[in-house]
Image (tube, rainbow, N blue to C red; front, side):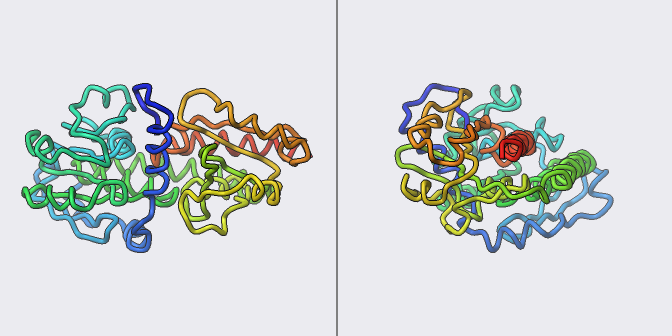
Length: 322
């Protein structure tokens, strides 16, 4: 995730790895739940006073007497998605690194997503907390529930889960129409990208998270979904870990046709060009070393498709260089 402050590299690496590793610790329940549409009556979409019932990504039914008017978000991607769903004005608090859109930077913070100050959350008098199922500590979530605060668990593991989140966040915030419209726009753009790139000739791709240790993404990580969307093949898709450590020798043996990296900053990571020490590597020989801004691909938000577009264009460049 991007940060607003300059952090030591080790801390920034830890933040990124937590974001990537945290994705599907409870993937089975989350995948099944996210495939289920929000449960609410037609009247709840138009009447702010109507009771609503929505299934979260843990498969739990959340009952609210009326749509939430004071929401606290416990992850940067949740904050961004609430704004995208048209209900950002319901936010009264968030966590560190919630820096998009600009309005999010003005919200009070209740800690970082890995360490929530429950008392600070309670002081904001929320009628709903939206938590990150695999990123927030279970004990902290239970502490909030013990304080009588309703908690909705969000867990976007795959690209289309972002659309599901937009839809349900709109319902939770009392503007189902806005959430539905945002979800429809996302799915339309996703379908267009899929139609354009998914059936293109395969490009064997190595996505590098970090240099030391050398880390990539496994086959169940959302970035691997993006690679497939673009007609690419993650050379480490067989690995089950979200952010597995690999070796230089393993990358050389896989001989990817393209290497893609994002790092942690707005600038292209210097270590991407370290691969030029192995000129026989196909990605190096063809100059297929590509950068995608981290805020566009490492957050599970609607901007993920902007990152996907850039990655798809990079792989199209790799095809042209054959």
